[in-house]
Structure formats: C-alpha cells, structure tokens
Image 1 (cartoon, rainbow, N blue to C red):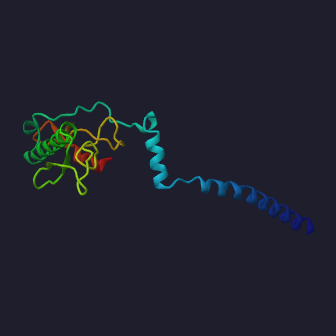
Image 2 (image 1 turned 60 degrees about the horizontal axis):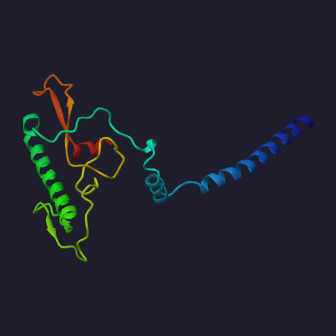
Image 3 (image 1 turned 90 degrees about the horizontal axis):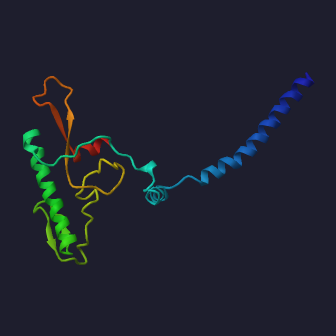
Length: 171
C-alpha cells in the first residue's frame, strides 16, 4: 500500500513540475497575441508578400455591354457607380480639389476645407470595388461586373452577372 501512495506522489510531483514549466510558456504565448491594430499594422507592413495577396483565378472584369448581358437595375447602378468613381478621380487627381461624395447629387468637386478632406477614390469602402487580383487589399478599382456560368436550367441567360458590390458578401 505504501508503494501505491509513493507512486501517486511521484505522479503528482511530475505533473506539478510540467505545469510550472509549461505555465511560463503559456504566459509568454499570451503576451504575443496581437491586438487588432497591431495585426492590421503587421498585415499592411507585409502587404507585398505573396501570402497576403490572394486573388480570384481567371476572372474577366467587364464594364461594357452590361444592358445586353445583365438586369437593368444593376446595370444602372453600375453606370452611376462608375460615373461617380471617374468624377472623383478627375476632381482630385486632375483638378487637385476635394470630392464631396454625396450620392444624392452624384458627388461634387469642391474646394478642400476644414470639413471637406480628400477622399481616397480607390478605397473599396469609399467608391472603388474589390480588386479580384488582390481580394483582401483595401485598394479598390473601378466598379465592374463578372459573368458566372449559370447552373440553373431555368435561367433565361447562359450566364449570371455578379457585380462587385455583390461580391463583398462572399469575401
């Protein structure tokens, strides 16, 4: 019986030893967890590396002949988004003014001031759309649509149009 208690005591001592050794390693690991800001800085600092540059393969970006291939509602929205994007580029990069992205008036090119700062036209959260060659980048491109082959026999078209603002929910 004494041998059994001695055996249990040895197991407890070994467990306590490994717990103390691993406790320091766990504490070191916890200090290396990055906050959201630090993680974002890490990603932006290493953005040129291929591990973060993820794209969709063989995507043909389209902007023309939308009304012949897709529904009118989304084609009108694409036309207006492209016009807004091009107006922003023309205003800020060519004229050196600030673009007031007011969707009611399709935007205005105004003088910069305290309340109106330059807008990043390419940023995908502003006017630009996700770049299919680098889907996790915040730098966007001019609005577009792509055609995806239809899987439905009920479809009146041979393909389905997917617009860049619709792709955001899939990424």
